[in-house]
Image (tube, rainbow, N blue to C red):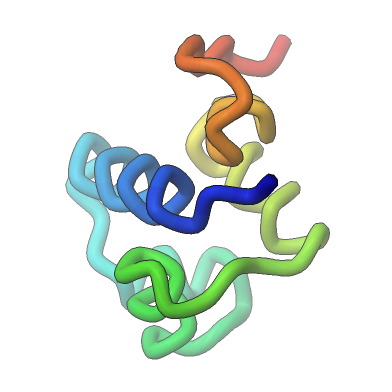
Length: 76
């Protein structure tokens, strides 16, 4: 089952590690800042398209973002 709390916590952590703002990530994904805020605060999930873009942006696996593994495993 999808754990929104894990997804949101990991998203916040990745944003902080990159010293990004929600606005910068929103521009990179082509969404609103409010959508990023909702995802980071556990109020919303994401689409497959955005999940893909998040993985590419932060160089982590979807399994990591979704809480299926604790290993970020950068993409090759």
